[in-house]
Length: 243
Picture: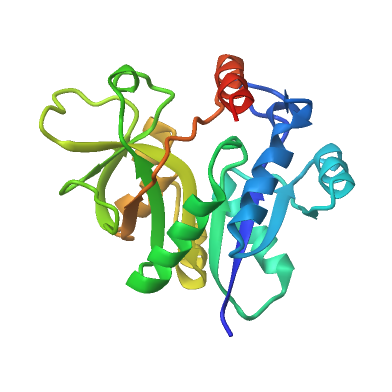
């Protein structure tokens, strides 16, 4: 039987927001909120991958599984190291859940897994409707597709970016920080050299795009906020306090 693993890559040394994973929302570290969302999805075991003992201790204190990794240039390569350490030959689908998305619904994660298995795609992700306020916000990553995303859509991504000029009439959505890889696609990705647009846009998915690895996009029924800077934490805290 084939299995899915959710791996959450995280570290304390983010330049824009140091110690971000341990920032508290409702007195609970953000990494634990994200871990909980992964568990709520019910798609498979959830692991936190990190080079930091402090994060490992917090995760274990809350009953979670943590994997110590070395230093990495991006989250995807950290996920790959953790995947190799799981030592489960039956895992054929790996979900890279960004640690700074504590609002993501478990149902959204399970939806992505369902779309991946039904459509036999090498890499998949999610997107939600883009609000007017987000259009020129460079902290909000956008994804462009050919047609309107609908409930059962799983469409090939045309491009990912933060800001794009002259985007009128194009099908642009708010990209959600989650990726699903087949085992083969993840193995292929980490062997590729860093790409020009990956560096220029600070978006690691551009490495896949520039090497013709297909990324498909499904519609997320909510718009979970990502936490890039401290101001975002305040927004997310307010939203989560409403629940």
